[in-house]
Amino acid sequence: MNLTTKNRLFIYFVLFIALTIDAFNFSSGFQFIKPSAVLLVLVYWNMALPDKVGITTALFFGMLVDFLEGSLLGIHPMLFVFITYLCQRFFYQFRVIPFWQQSFFIFIICFLSKLALALDFLNTNLEKSNMSDSSYLLTAFIYGIISAFAWPIVYFICRNFRRRFIKI
Amino acid sequence: MLRKEHKVSNISSEAIFAIPTMKPIKVLVSLVFCTLLLLSDIYYQSSDYLRSYGKDIIIPIVYLSEVPSRSIKTAQKILSSRKNMNSEMKSLKEKNLKLQIINQQIAELIIENKKLESLWDIANLDLSGYQVVKKRFLSSNDLVPTLTADINQSEVIVKIDDAVFGSAGLIGKVLLISTLKAEIMLIQDPKSLVPVISSSSRVHSIAQGSGIGRLGKLNNVKKTSKYSLGEILYTSGLGDIFPAGFPVARIVKITDRPDNNYLDISIEFISNPLNEDLFLIYTGSKNR
Image (cartoon, rainbow over all chains, first blue to last red; front, side, top):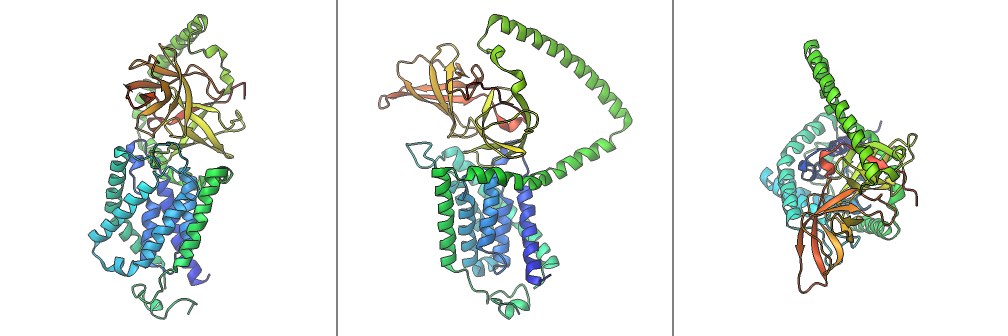
C-alpha cells in the first residue's frame, strides 16, 4: 500500500474512534457538555499534519456528525470546514505556543461552535433568530472549558499515535 | 517524493514549515456547498431521506461505543460468585412477586378505569399497536434534542408521526425511519407543537418546547382563558397525531403583560428522556 494512503487511513481510523467516543450516550446532563472528540482530533490533525487532512475530511466527518446528532444537514460540515481553515491558516503559530494558550484557542473554537448550533435556521421563534438563552450560554461556556481541559489529553494520545504509526 | 510535498517534510514530521497553507477558494467553494445543503434541508427537507440511511451507516459506530460498558457488565457478571447470584435470585424472586401483585392491582385499576370511562380513555387504544423501543442516542444539542431508538419493523410497523411515550407520559413523535432506527422529535424541541387540553379548566391550546431542561410555552392563549398554576395538560387528540388523554406538561407560570395580546404561559414538561432507556411507540392511530 502507498505510504500516503496508509497515513490517511490511520488518520481516518483515529477520527472514526473519536466518532465512536462521541456516540457514547450519557444519561445525565453531561450529555450536553461533553467535549466533541471529533472536533478536537480534527484540530489536532490539522495542526500536526496539515498536508494530510483538509476540506474533504472536514466535510465527510461533519456530515457523519450531522447524521449522528440529527441536526440540520450542513451545519457541522460548515463549522468543521471553517475550523479546518482557521487551523491550517494559523498552524505555524499554533504549534509553537504554550499548552495553556492552545487550550484557550480550543475554548474559543468550542464556545463559538456551540453558540453557532443555537442559530434558528427553521424560524421556530419569530421573535428572535437565535434560540440560545442564559442557560445555553452557560452550557456553551462549560462545554468550552471542558474541551479546553480535554485538549492536552487528546494532544498527547494523538501525538503518540502519530509517532508510532505514521511514517513520513 | 510525492507531488505537493516539499523536501523538508520528508526528513521529519516536525519540519513542516514548507507546507503551503490551504487555498481560500477551496474553503469558499466548500462553504457554498454547505450553505446549499442547509438551504435544501430547510426548504425541501432533503436530509430526511439522507439522514435515515446515514443513521444505518453509522450503526456500527454506535454499537462500538457500547462495547466498553457491555464488557464491564459481562466481566462483573462472570466475577460475581454463586453465593451472590443465589442471594440476587432470592431478592429478584421477591421483587417478581411484588411486581406480580402490583400488576394485578394495575389490571384491576385499568378495569375500573374502563368502567368509569375516565379521561385516560385507554379503552379506545389498540394495545397491540405499541412497540417497545430502546434509546440508542440522544443528541448533545439540548436546544434541538433528537432521540434515536432501535425499532423492529417486523414486530409492528412504525410510521412517521407515530406518537412516542415514556413512563411519565408523551415523549414525542417519530420524525424519520430507517431500516433499524427511528429518529424521534421530542416534545421539548422548539419545532414540536402538541395540541393539549387542561385538566380542570378544559381549555384547548398548543404546547411548544424550548429545549431540554427549559420551560416550554403555550401558544396564543387568550387573556380570558382561565388557566391555573399547577394544572396538568393532557394531549387533546386534535390533529390525529397524538392519542388523547396522555399527560404532557404542567403549568408553572402565568404572566399577563399589558403589551401582549395573549397570556404568557410557561409549562414544565413531565417526561424527561434523559433518565429513561425504554419507550413505547404507538402505531395505532386510526385516522391517519
